[in-house]
Image (spheres, rainbow, N blue to C red):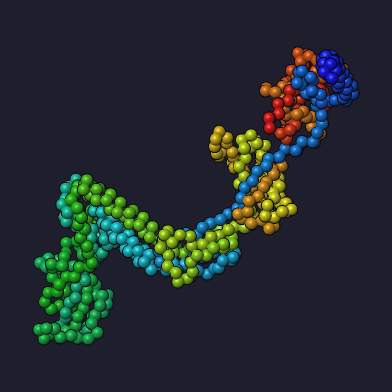
Length: 527
């Protein structure tokens, strides 16, 4: 038994060696079989790569420039807004007297929304008006001090100053009378009124003058009268032209026909006025002489001084200030009538008639939306903003309204960009005229349809290198399997670029449809 076991042990190593040798030969045969299959597959597949081939070892993709329809789009999202909106506020305070509108009402621009009690404001306007009058009076008085004027129309009877004289405030400058005619009432005792008539000639003796002055009867009493000393007689009024020397200090008597007047009658002068200097100064420009006629308000001369000029300037500033205050007070009245600044729909009405408002502290009185259209402001990346122009069509969808598509139009492209984290975006305003069930506040997605080119010569975007060049594959640069055999044979060519849809780009010059180009695709990102 032991011998048999020993014989088996001596035989085991040889059997193992034979098995091991057989195993290695089997693996070699399997590898050769797999390699043969791969070669056969390559021979069958590589010739079929044709237009788009990756060259083994070189990493180049070969592709022909082809004709394609390109549509450039820019995508984004935003929140819908009304065409215009306005929050109605006020800076004035008071009780609301009238608020003739309700929520959801359509109101026109300029329509009355709120009318507030303006009693206090009216009082301020009245006070401001009085201040203007007072300031104007002060200014006119200051001007009159510089340039004294005639208070009445008439004849200069006396001149008290000459040019170049310095006068003090209150000094007389000239005396003006409205007429040179004097009026004297005479009493003729024991003479009936019928003895006199209007237009009758009279001789008037004035003061101690020896020569009489001719006069004319202008009125006769219609009955006799009894004087204070008991004499009864007729009263006759005589008009006498003043020779220029008579004044109300004189008395006179008269002879009419064969009758002499009783006693001495007072001489009555016509209306007169004396012009005085309102302030101290030097007289100039006084060209009127005694006997010269003047009109009411006519400047007689100038009384000038630094004090008068300063007074005028202060009065002018006071008048301007009063006018400004009056204008402000008057303008504030308008604030008590609050009107709609736009035409639209009332979204909110927060106050009603009878409520009291406290200026800006009351907050928003009402909110109005212009719903003639909807708008959205979409931020577009700086890489795409050059593709967007006003007037382009926009396709709009909303998650709240699945399956519905709306059309908008690019209204404005703003150059006021916003930069964040190294990237700049620009706001694009899109208008939606037919907005159906869309509402302000909805979040929407927009696709701006930019340039569209039919049958454009295109190549992959990845094929265009820096500087606008592509690598053209000349004859002889491809192997029988359609791959690049030698990258050094590739021809670098500058091309003119057109629009791009981010996958393909238009070539407007430098390539023709069917030209082959080669490029190295960017390596795929590791997952």
